Image 1 (tube, rainbow, N blue to C red):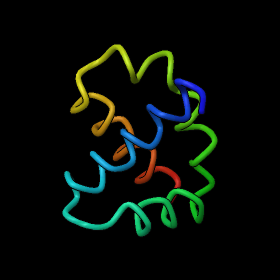
Image 2 (cartoon, rainbow, N blue to C red; image 1 turned 90 degrees about the vertical axis):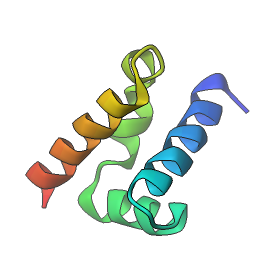
Image 3 (tube, rainbow, N blue to C red; image 1 turned 30 degrees about the vertical axis):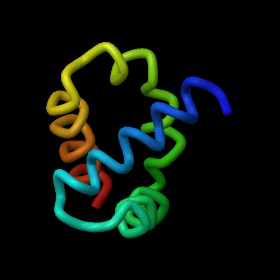
Image 4 (cartoon, rainbow, N blue to C red; image 1 turned 180 degrees about the vertical axis):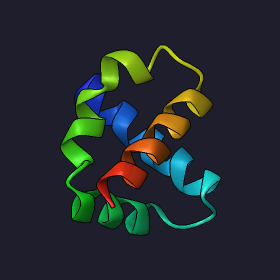
Length: 66
């Protein structure tokens, strides 16, 4: 698995913990909002930041896409 794929799974699991839900539910939400590929492609930025910054960005993306 690529480093991007590994990080995406890590980010998904940590974000689900942050939201106190399951990774499956979060992934479903991202899919429904059309954000999964975008979030995956943000590897270069998200993996060098604090996770909370990535979470804040994802929250904003989800709010805008809803």
